[in-house]
Length: 164
Image 1 (tube, rainbow, N blue to C red):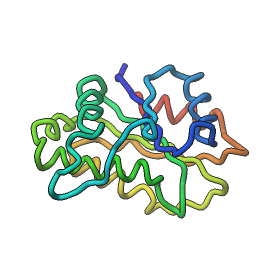
Image 2: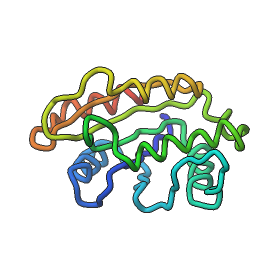
Image 3: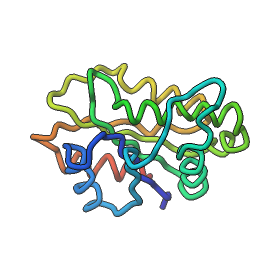
Image 4: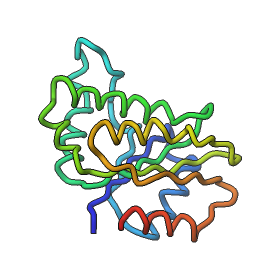
């Protein structure tokens, strides 16, 4: 079985994503990272933020896990700001930490989202799919959920499918 880490991009500890986390953990226990607990600065071309939490966190994740399961609420038809900043910082792994960036090759990424209403266009998944491809990772897909009507069999099936 793949070593999977759940990376929560929500800005709060008691939001709709927390219920998803609870349900996913009932299906399969996995390590959980709450991005809001880390000091991760925006990407900058001068790499002035190299002493924040990003590089130690990513090195730990790359070392320990084969699969990154990203969880994000949908804000304004896009991923959360916390998750966007986190993914933008992966650029550090292509510039000044290239040896770590190369270690992403062969790893996997999947995404679960939460928002009120089923309004995601297929283009929503492109940043994840294209980023994974660019980094040599496999994009295992995405699942959108609505807090009021979480489809438990669909969620369980998605989690099982990304593990295969």
